[in-house]
Length: 404
Image 1 (cartoon, rainbow, N blue to C red):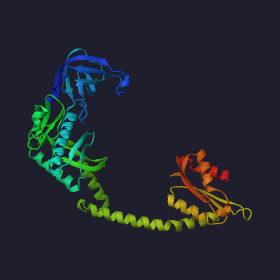
Image 2 (image 1 turned 60 degrees about the vertical axis):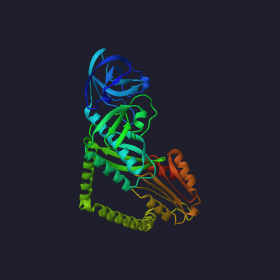
Image 3 (image 1 turned 45 degrees about the horizontal axis):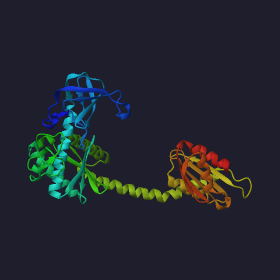
Image 4 (image 1 turned 180 degrees about the horizontal axis):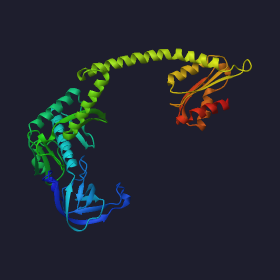
């Protein structure tokens, strides 16, 4: 016996009564993520199963919580957290989740219709996510003007509060009525019609009027294989996102001490200043490294005999990788000096030597990494890398000194 899908005719109904046909423990091997759990089959249901890009409803069957809803051949399987008794049972859906899904799914139909009718971009897939929904469009890249135009056109239809109806008929009957997407399914089809703009086969839950959508916000567009993925939010989600965007703009404007309408120019100014400072720091790093190298050499003891190796080993704190390299190179300019440097915060390591020290820094780094894993390499006179675990920075310096 097939499950009668009550939501087909009335997506706004939230309570129902049904006959429990079966209730069986579900095998742990199914890896549902719920334990313990039972699978319930009813003669009819309002709860929507995951399908067509739309997630399942949640709700209750008697005292049991509905954790998942799935298509099971021509029946609907309700995954619940406790067994239910045979006989009649009252059920309900979690209305906020249902209404949110109706807003997003109806918004997708409207947006897809606009992209196809006005810009010739066909929708190849749809996904209703927890925070954002997406449609994949086939065709040339939608420009910012196209994305804005699609959003404006869709919202204009929303403001007109057009009627949304459920119709039934065969594929042949709908083929001559401008259906947006042809389907090969035989028999009677369920089709959602948005008056004057869209006619689309669909088994999902939808609104009754476009005004219930509130409005649509397009959040971005990225390349996905051969298609273009458009992210969007509708209704309550759009209101929440717009409020958070406004709060964020206000916070950043306050931090930059500018009016919201001047935010772009303020950000551009900060970027220019940052780039100028970065260039200045980059030009000063070698000079600072040379000065610090001279101080380290002066503070360290001289080699006991002329020609002996002199090791300068330092564990730094928060040193820039570029500075670490410059410091190693500056130290290695002095005859017979070997520099063993590491940063405690980042785990970056630099081994450098004056050529007359006649050791192999690359080989030394590889030997150290055998005991303390990391990645890097270099030449006989200069090698650099990064440790997998920053807490090994100090032990690495000690091990390198021992190996030398």
